[in-house]
Image 1 (tube, rainbow over the protein chains, first blue to last red):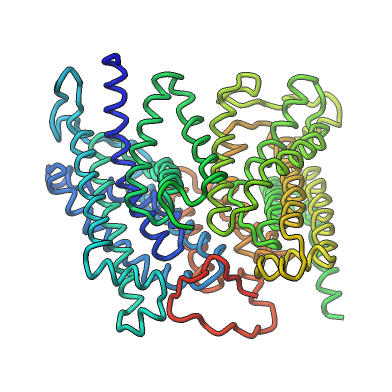
Image 2: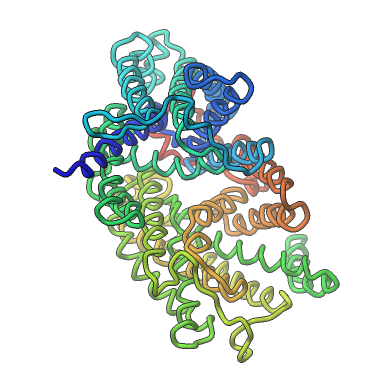
Length: 287
Length: 332
C-alpha cells in the first residue's frame, strides 16, 4: 500500500470519528423519541461559536471550550425540549419537521444577525502544529478531535447501556406509560436525553471549530452529513453511528483521492440512497 | 349567501390585484411570486398533505422542470415554456422509478429517503458540463417572440401563474372528492387499516406521487420562464423542498387552500428581507420567519386553516409524551 493511500485512510478515519461524534446526538434523539431534529446542524454551529468566543474573550483552547460548549449546548437542548419539542412530539409528523426546522432557521439567522456572515477560524497553533508519526503527517487538531470523539461516543454508549439513567431513558422510549407506572417521569428522562444529546453535540462542535471554518450556515452542511451517518448506522444506535461515521469518513477520503474531490459527495450520497432503499434499518439499527 | 360573496370578492381581488398595484411594480412582482410559491406548495400538498407522505425531496422535480425549460432553449432554441410539458413527462417517469422503492418506507424513513435522492441529484448535476455545471444555465436574455414569455412587467406572469394555480387547485379539488381522495386520506390515517379494507395503498400512493411530481415540474418550469436562470442550488437545493413543505404545513397540509395561505404569509416576509432591509437586516427577518414557524408548529400543529374548521372532537390525549407510533399518528 502506498504511503499516500495510507495517509488518506488515516485522515479519513479521523474525520469519520468526528462525524460519528456529532451524529450520535441526532441518533439518540431519533431513537429515544422518534423525532428528527432538523436543528441538529445549528446546535453544532452554536457550539463552534462558543469555542470561538472562549478563544477571543479568554484566549483559551479546547481544554476550556469543550466543557463550556458541552454545558451551554446541554442547556440549549433542554430548553428546546421544554419550550418546543415536548409539545410538538404529540402532533403530526409534519408539525415536528415544521417545528425543528423553524428552530433551525431561528438559530441560524440569530447567529447571522449577532456574529455577521463572516467565516471565522481559530488559529492553527491553538492545539499544536502538525507532526510526523511513522511516516504519516498528522494534524494535531484533527487527531485530538478524532480521539476525543471515540471516547465520547463510547461514553455515551456506556451511559445508555450500563447506568440506571440509561435504563430509565430506554424504558421511557419503549413504553412511556409503563415507565410512568414504575415511577419514572417520562418528561424528565426525555429532557435528560435532549441534554445528553445536545451536550455531546456541543463537544463535537467545539472540537470541529479547531480545524474547520465557523459561519452561521455551517450547520446546513454538517446536518446532511449527520443524516447520512445516522441512516447508515441505524436510527437510534450509538455504536451504529460510530461505525457509520468511520465508514463515511473513509469512503469520502478514498473516493476524493481515487476519483477526484467533485465525486466524493456523489459516492457518499449514492451510499445514502442505497442504504435507505435496501436496508432502511441501517447497519446496526432496529426497525 | 355570505360564503358566495366572500368567494366572489376573493376572485375579483385576485384578478384586479395587478391593476390596483400598477404604480408599484414591486408589489406586482410580489403577487406573481406568491402565486408561484403557492403552485409549488399545492403540488407538494397532493402527496405530502392528502396522502400524508412527507416528502422533503420535491426539489428534484422542481429542478427537472426548470432544467427542461432551459435545456430546450439552450440546445434547440425552443421557447422555455415549451420545455415545461417535457419536464412534466420526465418527472412522471422519474417519480415512478423513485417512488416504487421509496414509498415502501414510512414516516421519517420516507422523508429521509426523499432527502437522500434529491441531494444525490443536487451533487450529480454540477458534474455534467452539458447541464451547465455548477454555474447553471440562463434562458433567453432578449425576447425573440412573445412565446419566450420574457416580460419586464410582472403582470403577464401574474395572470399566467393565477391560471395555473386555479387549474391545479381544481384538479386537487376533484381528487379530494373522488374515490382516490378518500383512499389517500384513509392511507394517511392508517395505511394498515386502509390496506385491510382492500385499498391498494402502494398503487394510490404512487399515483399521488407521480401527479404531484408533474405539478411540481410545472412550478419549476414557470420559475425559469420568470427568473430566466437556474443553477444546481436554486433548482435542486434542499431549501426548495423545505419551503414547499413549510408553506403547505403553515396554512394547512391536506387542505385545499392551505398552501396558498402559507405562501401569502411567508413569501412577502421573505421578500421584505431581500428588497427593503438587505444586508444585516436579512438576518432579523429570517429570525422572525423561524419564530413564526415555531409558534405555528407549537400551537397550531395542523396549520392556520385549522382555526376556521368547526371544533373537532379531539382524540384522547396520548399518555404524556408517549412516542409509540408518534410517526404514524395524524390528527383527523
